[in-house]
Amino acid sequence: MKSIVELDVELPRERVATLFADPENSTAWMHDLAKYEPISGQLGAQGFKYRLTPKKGDMVFVATVISNDLPNATSVDLRAARVSVAVTARFIAISPSRSRLVSVEVFTFKGVVGKIMGLFAGGAIRKAHREHMESFKRFAERRGRADTA
Image (cartoon, rainbow, N blue to C red):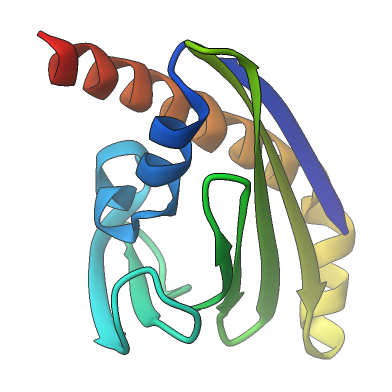
């Protein structure tokens, strides 16, 4: 299952890309995330691994940075017990102070139960993806204003 969200952010592309690619910011904009924990590797570098623990439920993800071609794009592979998610974000300069974020998430559900769950969860997954990206936009624009103040 694939979910694509595009939105414009009132910040330069480089700043949007840097804020988005830094997993230490995750808990500031993912409302359902309890904590981020580095596991191995250099922060942001290809192969860097980290854990994302939710506030509710037991779907802990281990993330691996697949590529980091900032300020153009970044890709992360998220793995949990019943699902894998390939996340790719592209950053497009619209003007010197405005950027477009294109976030693509491809979900692969594991096992029979996971695949059945995936059939019914598509709408909720797309909604959560959009909410996360809108939350990131608010976070980035607040942070950008604070950085220039």
